[in-house]
Image (tube, rainbow, N blue to C red):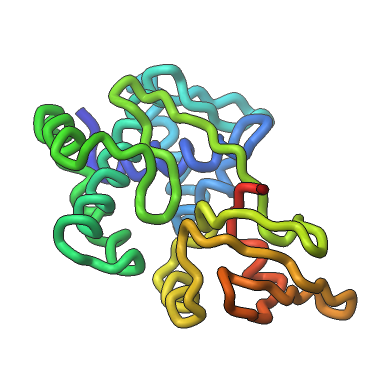
Length: 218
């Protein structure tokens, strides 16, 4: 069994590993969890004793197979609860993260599998992120950042890189949601801002916004 804090560390390392080509530094973990590097070092020792991480000096931290499966289970619960909150309790997608952060620590595997079945075995959460299966397998998604599209190229919005409440509220304000077709009309050399067409509506967005929207090219 793992404490709430230990589970949060495992989940953080899991997310960092998805985009990493080598071990994760303690500084990267500290930044992710907004804590001190010394606190990370102490926790890594505890997790190493539980055989869920391996730490090598100058090479960083890596999850073991047990660590990956444990972390994937936490992510699975988090994303299933987000689907439940949006689809069944009418939460908006910018409200669910903090609530799911609490619910993801529930230990009952039966509850999780019943929840999955009740929801119709969803493949993605409300933010477009894939939901790991009960074995911890994560289906990869063929996706690109909107900022990489060239003029006149189009794609379907399938996810967000920034799932903060502030960013999601901004998208709601602009009328940008998952499943919409986005076409690049113009890219400005001066500030890399992008003129886009979302369905039939024309918008101008910053490079920062374009770097936080995932699309599937069409």
